Structures are given as structure tokens and as C-alpha cells.
Length: 245
Image (cartoon, rainbow, N blue to C red; front, top):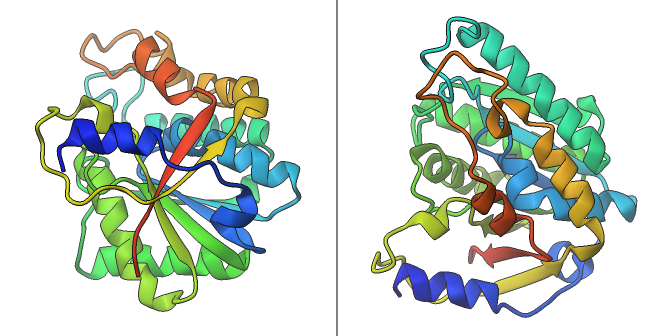
């Protein structure tokens, strides 16, 4: 199926409840970078916390690839900043700092296999066990970013350690794919109505100031989220594509 048709089908997935998505347990969100959790699953997290469900976040990379030419924010300082932004963002959504695990793998070089990826997979499985997860959510395997693909692969490696946990993927960068890109069979899964949490999600996204503002002003080539992308991802629904067992 072409990417444009796949994403249109994802936009038309049936609406479902948290019970339908997750079952009775908690859930784990796996984010390749600090901010993907808010962009892709901010409504999901807020809705789950509003119901009192346990949620854990695993942030895979250190996020140091967003501003590689900044002298004001060399890698270690940038990593500290982005982790602090993440803690502030998820606090808006209802999570405590202790609910977040930062794996600190190298941004743009997260491995999809091998010992480091296996260690990351075990961290995901521990997070799932810690919150009695019914489901794990990770970025779409066809997102056009190597770390997003790697995060999906890591969750695939974790699956044997959590055989009864459902797996879903959420697109973040998928809408930037060339429309003719082949991405496999049509999606199955559910959309979640997050309209009651849109303002909360927007505040969480905005907490990632290094990615949404000119906070880091000394790197003209630095990354910044486009308002159109934020608007696209902060609509009334979030889409979750089932990964078959």
C-alpha cells in the first residue's frame, strides 16, 4: 500500500476507548527522542492518567542531534536540557519524573539490533512489567527517521519478554514520506478521541522549547518543529496501528 493511502486509512481507523486499546492494565510509550511522546501520544498519556492508569515512558535517544553546531549547548548540556524539557512536558500530561526512563543512546545512531538494542529492549520490557502494561506504543516503523525505525525494532526485540502485551505504532514523521512509498498492508488498529486533552497536549509539546522556539539561537542549522506539523499532530484524534503478534 502507498504511504498516502495508508495514512489516509489510519486517519479513518475506528474510534476506540482506552479499554479497547489497552485492556485493564497500564501502558508504556516508547519515544525515539525527547518530544515524540508528546507529539504522538500526548493525548493518550493524558487520557490514561485521567483514568488513573499507570504509564511509563522510555526515551531511547539522548536528543543531542537537534543542534549539533551550537556552542552554547554542547552535547552534554543539550542532553540535560532536553531531558528537563521532557520531565516538564510529561508533568503536564500527569506523569512523575520517576515514570520516565532515559536510555541516552546516540541520537541518529540508535541501533536496531545487537547487544545495545537488546539492552534497550529489556528496558522496555521492565517498564512494561513495572506498570502491568496491557500495551506498548512506539513510533511507526516506516517513519522516515532512522531512530524511529530503530525504536520500532527495539520494541520488536522486547516482545518475546512481554508476550501478552499488545503493540501499537504511532506515526510522527510519516506524513513527510513521498506519497508513492510502499509501506505494506493496510493498517488495522484504533483511533483515540483526545479532543478533551488537546490543550493539555499542546502545552506538553510547547514545553519542548528547544524544539519549538528559538531558545537555542546560535545554530542556524538547528532543528525546529514546524507549526504545521505540530498542528497536524495535535488534532482531536491520535492513531495507533496494530502490530500483529
